[in-house]
Image 1 (cartoon, rainbow, N blue to C red):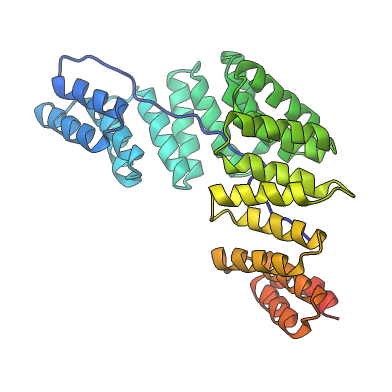
Image 2 (image 1 turned 60 degrees about the vertical axis):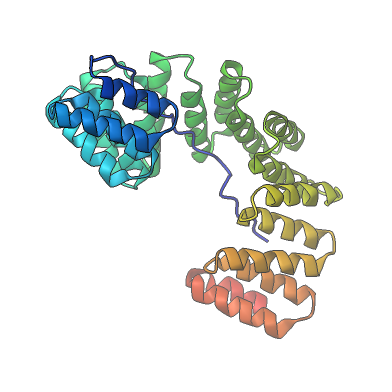
Length: 340
């Protein structure tokens, strides 16, 4: 049975902050102060006043774009960053922030273009390399992403997110030892970086170092007991240890679900652990919840059908397999073999 985890590796996106400025314009300064206080509506109001006073104030457009981005008004943010760039063609921060928004909306090629422009203006901008690496990773250019993260590290050897991101991409090409080394370096730089512990733990799992993985996930939980990912990861590690009682895994998955009731992968993990513990009805119930959360998850129907066979409910299992085939026709032969 396949456990699908959307948290196998987590991408760390560096946060882009507006630069504090003093232009003698009280509205710009007030807008920045409100951004720092997360009062984005107030910031937009002040920065709009600044623009009304001086329609050529590129910084005011840039900062208003940041406030709009923070409110997920991505279209408005792009418009403001674009206006800032039209007023100041060398405004590298505007290119970086516009690239960030393009990446967030799935325009990875556009984001890469913006980060590249920022680097043409300032070749020492490590953040542009980090974020361009993320966009390259998203379009499948893994070597290009690794090269960008490496360049960011050359510029800023203490850039922990760059090490984490390089480790994530390195793991995708199967070099888990190198990935683990990058996560370890990030931990040296930021000892409480839960992303680094969680990702190093996943790398250790893939290298079959389950005790090391559990130690890393436990550390991530100690750093942030309210983060469901650490519990999910530790539950996953406990699940794959042969001959171990699955109680610990079930407990961890249950805690992840308590913290995030919509965490479908945690229900999948708990359902599999329950089956391995002999709780067939519990496993079926968890897969039913996964289906409610994601009605198009073919694997959830497949798993539930397999569990129902264990419960001698063959007719209902057949219905689940047929639904799995409908959603995922390329695996039809596998489902048909199980139905036979």
